[in-house]
Each structure stands twice: as C-alpha cells, then as structure tokens.
Image (cartoon, rainbow, N blue to C red; front, side):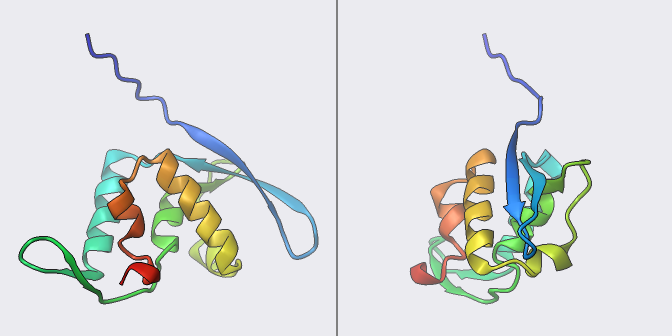
Length: 119
C-alpha cells in the first residue's frame, strides 16, 4: 500500500540582520504548481544539447532567489519580498538555497544546473 502525506514540511530558520536582531523565517516545500513554475524558469536560463546535456548557462540572474521566493516565508507565513532576499549576502543565499533544495527533494542535477563552477 502506498501512503502519501500532503502535509507541507517546513524548516525553521533564524536570520541575523545587520542590527544583530534575529528574525524567524521558515523554509517550506513548494506546491506542485510552484515546482513546475520553478523548473520552467530554470529551464529558460540554460541551453542543452540534443542529448540533454548542459551546454551553457544563458542567465545567472535569480540563481538562488528563483527558489527562495517560492519557499522562504516570514514567521507569519507571508512570502519574503524579492528585494529583501536580494539584499542579503550571497553566502547566506547559498546556504538557504541548499537547505531549500534538500527540503524540496530537487535532484543533484537540478541543484547544480546553475552552479557557475559546473559551467
């Protein structure tokens, strides 16, 4: 028998802001529609050969934000604005992206498609 849960899994996140204050957020699983939209956005930023192998990255913009805008929410459940996420250091975005990718069970290939070290 197959049993599937449709409960949205989350991870509590605390982010220390510039003032040293700790702000609570959550990373959450994407819905099916959000995941489809995320994959479509990612696919539009890469070029594949006829075998489906990555040829080159066409656009690095939104590399981490494309996922985080769909998965990072404030403590009240509201989406975190793109402008807020974009204002954080790249290192913080990478860490949040990594955890969100794990939570959403994105494949290693999907996680690394936009990794500049892989191009």
